Image (cartoon, rainbow, N blue to C red):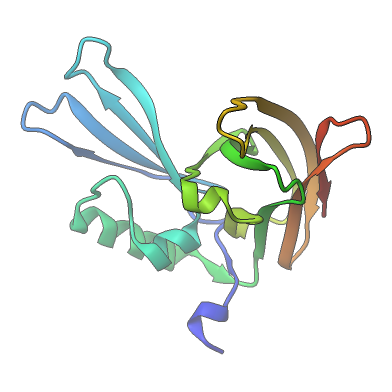
Length: 201
């Protein structure tokens, strides 16, 4: 079996935190935390007057191995993190592909705020991605069992002179079984003209 075809179980990987600095004064740094659903990046910046903690991003474990780290992670930390995950993961877990589709032709997805098990997932919607009918929010390993998903999707009219926006908020619980799982959010326009997001597991 090809290495890329293996579904890995990361549920037994010990939680650990790595930290690196962005400047010599060591008043701006980034941490990466191992969470059950992936890697959570948390930054702290005291180099500016309004400084403090901020969300630095999220990666699934599969994204880390496929695309590499983010936030200018030093190579020695990336190597140690990679070895830590490889040492403790085992084959035979579950994988989730969470995607959004729309059939509303006159709207584009402008912003998306997604929480999986209360962990934020950053969804950067650029102009090219917004034009696609299908956008993948999450694609990676996940624990078997029940999970909670919450989201806020903001749409805007394709007619720039309109300027109108729609916000859709919802949450639900779904179950994950071993192997590959797909959860699809589908944006539709109801008969009364309202915008709704239905989900299919």
